[in-house]
Picture (tube, rainbow, N blue to C red):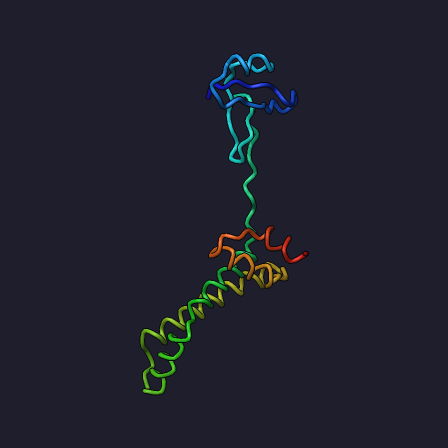
Length: 148
């Protein structure tokens, strides 16, 4: 995109941009009309110098722990009550029993992933991330609050 820009870092070609329409002002402070590109975090670079953004690597064991928490949340008291009632009625298969078996099998798969990774999972951190998905709170923010 064409914007008024001034180079901040000659090595990386990061620029400061003017996002208004006052061309005279931007020229007075040393900006020139240049082709620029923006990163996802809002930094600008001259066109062709945009750095490759690193994608955060997902930790397989940590993701498995989050998946376990999600699966356990599906094991609601109502589902368990229905399964108990079905078992007391002598049923060997019902929606509740089958669903609990399905969830249990999925949890076993995730636990195997964690076991094979050889990693120790910080469950408090995993729970914080899990609830952060619902409440929009980033883990870094909650860690900062925890340290206060």
